[in-house]
Amino acid sequence: FEHVVFFLVMMHSIETAQEPECARGKRNGNVMWTCYQEKDNRTCYEKSFSYDSRQNKCIQIPYQGCGGNANNFPSLSDCTANCGKGLTSWDYKLMQYMTEKKRVNCTTPFHSSMNDGKILRFHYDSKSKKCRRVQVSNGDGYFPALRHCLAMCNTTEMIPRRCLKPTRNGTRPVKGWTCHFNAQFKTLFCSKPTNLQK
Image (tube, rainbow, N blue to C red; front, side, top):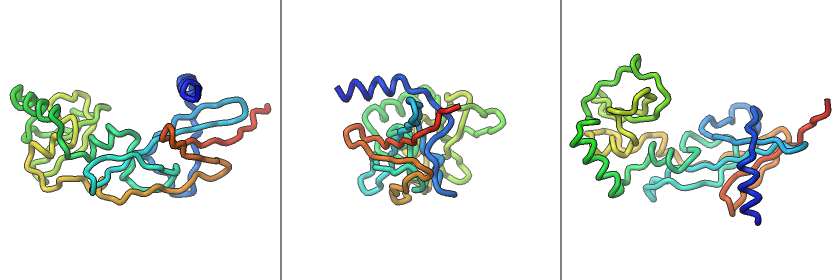
């Protein structure tokens, strides 16, 4: 029954502009909150993932909502795309396809003036010999994930510095927000009473 209630609440969520407030300088821009208003209460929730270099994989962390560092990602796929270097059999097939079709290579120059889109891809910078995260308008010609760029090009950096930072669970929000980590859903829920009187 709890699963059904949770699902219905999430499906009927109305995103609001106000998310949990952090102490000055402690807001983490990598955290993605989803918020909804329910009678006299505003509730927000989020999930966070961090790259664990010892295990060479991304793991979910019990983040507290504020602070921490750049090694914090809103989804497993975002963390893996940015930090993961482990390749699956699907990755090898994809790289073979990219090579055969000459869709992506390590010598394609990146022109920022021609690529101002919202698609996240990775580009190999042959001058610095590093794979760089880029926002493009057309994803063709760029690596879909960091691990593909690292595997196919002669990089000097195997894992970005962001991913090598230690995992930090952060601190709790302030100004009346109360939070709890729901172990069943592996989600941080924060709520705050609101005054809806006119």
